[in-house]
Length: 356
Image 1 (tube, helix red, strand yellow):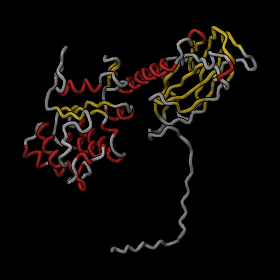
Image 2: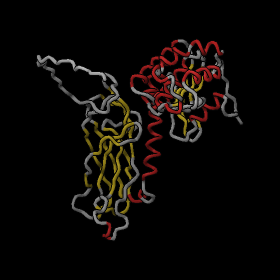
Image 3: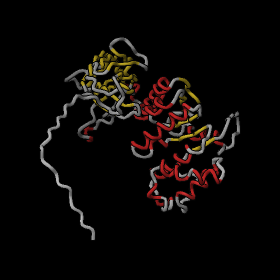
Image 4: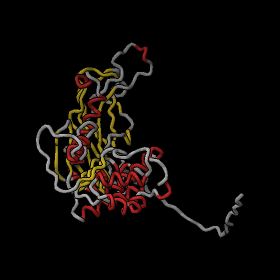
């Protein structure tokens, strides 16, 4: 399940888990459910790990004897062998997350509910969580995963749903839902940023890739330049307006802002229609991105110049696209590099330790 904050993802997980009562509709769940919805929920902070494992194991359907037999295995998976004597209130958030995930995956539940837990812990533990989820899928168990990380959704899920404004907006293949989620993110971000009167002043009426695609789902080969065309309409005079192109990641964070280009260099007041062509070098790694175009006035260097409209900008028009490459490394950019290693032949003496 993906969606912006407040869309209802965690609420839906709690309804499935039976934590919240249902006041309308119906949810059917077959088998034992193991929820890991909020970090630390169900743990007793004053107790150490072993006692918490016993309590949580029984809460998730194990008998006390089963929970006791699996305690060492749970602690080993969570990599907490050296911290079993500590009370949980002294655990870091990552340690509590590892312990909660380990308990959940050792109770042999039929349905697992996971809320953002894959964002907890170091990369090694996250990879181990991914392997566990893959094994569960092979065993025919159901994993319901909430995440803002589209890479996790694509790696672990067969189907995805987009929740927005407490409704299911789309359900289907993870890649399709990821593109829809990106579109929702960008609309919300840019609508909030746009000035209230800017649309009356200027608008990017059309934005498309140079091959004619204007749909919000396009694919570009790695290292292939990004060619785009835009049509701009300035309805009221703007002060030396500039066209700006920005590349953003799937979370809406700017990765690259092209140098702004004045529409009419040398003119203080500009009005009319313009066609713009842009070519941007593509050094993006495999993944999903967005290209955004807007027209804006430069921010006034001196706010005392009396121009209260300084810095007007149009709402952004955008296109989402995917960059195809040989693999997905998790990087943002794809650059060439050469690394050479040369042995020096110098032997290094091991340090001597003196214990007092």
